Length: 455
Image (cartoon, rainbow, N blue to C red; front, side):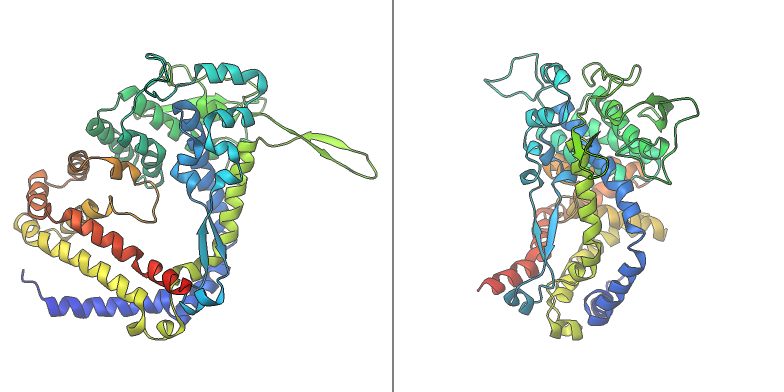
C-alpha cells in the first residue's frame, strides 16, 4: 500500500478545522458551555462514585507501605481555576489554572506519622505505629524490620495500579495487567495479590454496602434486616467471588481478613474502627448547645476534594479552549492550538506509516491493523504523558522492563509477538526522540503564552 503524503496532509487539515470548530472556536466554546449546563446535575454523582474510591485506597496503601499520602497521584492532582489578569487575557489565557498543594491545607498528608496522629484513635496509635511496615533507609532502619522496594514498583503502587482499575475492561484483562507487572518487575506474588484484593474490595464496597462517608445514596445497598454489618462481594486476584462482612471502611482499607490478607499486609481492626470522630458543638438559642461526633479528618479531606472538583465543572469549556486569542477563535488558520494539534497528529501518522508495511505483510483484518498501530503509539505515549495521572510506573521502568511489559500486554490482546518485535526493531532508535518531541509539542503553547503574559 503506497503512502500518499498529499492526501494525508489534506485529511489532517480537514480534521484540524473540525477540531477547531468543536473545541476552540467561539461557537464551540458556547456549545460546550450549554452542554455543561445540561449535564452538571449528573456530574456530582460521577465524582462521588469515582474519586473517593481511589483516595481511600491511597490512604490505605499509605499506612501499609509507609508512603506519605501526598505522593499518590490521585491525591496530588488538585487545581484552582482563577480569572486571568489583563496581560494573560490578551494572550488567550481564558482561565488561569494553578496547581495547589493539598498538603498545605491538610498538613498530615506530608507524613505518615502525622497522618496516624491526626486520624487514628489515641489508644490505637502506638500499636499501629510500632507494627506498620517501614521503607528501609540505610543507616536508620533495622534489618528485618523494614522492606526495600525498587523505584518502578513504588511508582506502580502510587499511581499505575490504581489507574488499571479506572481503565479496566474485563476482569480477566485487569488481573492479567497486574500479573504482567509482577512478572516484569519481579514482585512478590503475595504483594500483588494483596494490592489487587484491596483495590477490588474498596471499589466494590461503594455500591455493595452503605458505609457512612463512602457510600452513595441510590447506589449503595443497605445492610440486611437485623444485621449491622455490610456485605461486600468482590472478585479476588484468583478470579474467585468472595463475600465479606464489614462494619466500617477501615476494615476494608487496612484490616486483616482471614484467608485473603497475607501476614504482614494488614492490621487487626476493632469492631468500632480506628478513625477518630472529633466532637462538634452546635449552639442553639432555644435548645442549648449539643455535641455530636464529627467526621474524621481523612473523610473531610476526601469530601473537600470532591466538592472542589464538582465546583470546577463549569470551567471545562474554557480550560479546553485555553491559550486561544479572539482572532484564533474566529479562524483556525491563525490558531496556535490548532497548529499544535496538527503537529502531534503528524507525528502520530509518521509513526503509524513506518509500521504499516510490516503490519500488512502479516495482517489484513482492519481491526487487528488498528490494534498494531495502537500498540506502537503506546510505546511513545506511555512514557511521555503530561496531564494524565497513573503513568509514573511506566516512566520509572527501564526501557527493557517496559518493552517486556508492552510485548506481553499486546500478546495477551491477540497480537503476534514476532510482528511486534519486527516493528520495534525498525523504530526503536527513534523512540526516545519521539517522546521528547511529543512532550515538547504538548507544552509549547502554554509555556509561550505565559512567558508573553509576563513580559
